[in-house]
Amino acid sequence: QVQLQESGPGLVKPSGTLSLTCTVSGGSISSSTWWSWIRQPPGKGLEWIGEIYHSGSTNYNPSLKSRVTMSVDKSKNQFSLKLTSVNAADTAVYYCAIKGGYSSGPRYYSYIDVWGIGTTVTVSS
Amino acid sequence: DIQMTQSPSSLSASVGDRVTITCRASQSISTYLNWYQQKPGKVPNLLIYAASSLQSGVPSRFSGSGSGTDFTLTITSLQPEDFATYYCQQSYSTPLTFGGGTKVEIK
Image (tube, rainbow over all chains, first blue to last red; front, side):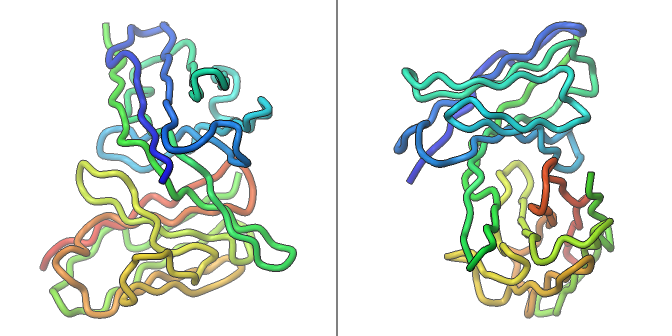
């Protein structure tokens, strides 16, 4: 079973850059998988930030696209998230996750089936 | 973006009750709809995918239905461990979007 572990600073100053890394164990970052980032502000719902494939292809949430960069490090079996110009609204638990899926005829149904434990990032001076 | 609207936002129920949660998409998403359960301080857990397929290991008291824009998660005979927040999520197109959540509380 693939496991994910987020790491990075728990406190980021306003206008600074949030940088998180997700380490993949029990599987290869080069597998046919989209690697995702999802966040959850305190007491609120889930927001998909974006995803990256091992080739480097990305899909970002348009609401964050101008501030987000994702990357893959195959040598370390890791993928990363950078979010620039952060403010208090970016305070959240950040999860890395795997978008799995299931084929039924011509259709491919995707879902988030593996999550990291999450890491809390607070934006504050 | 496809907007997902859940109702109710919260409900109170007793052990043994039948509970129904509704999720509506802002446009047709066929059956590209997933349901998750999240307990306080825990990671979301996939319950249902493709609108009605039960994820492995999930109790059969959970079921999903619907297609197009209207979907339902049903819990027959609510158990103590089912008190949690439930989220729907569309996988029809990116950005993936979640409903606002339904908190199921003890009556």
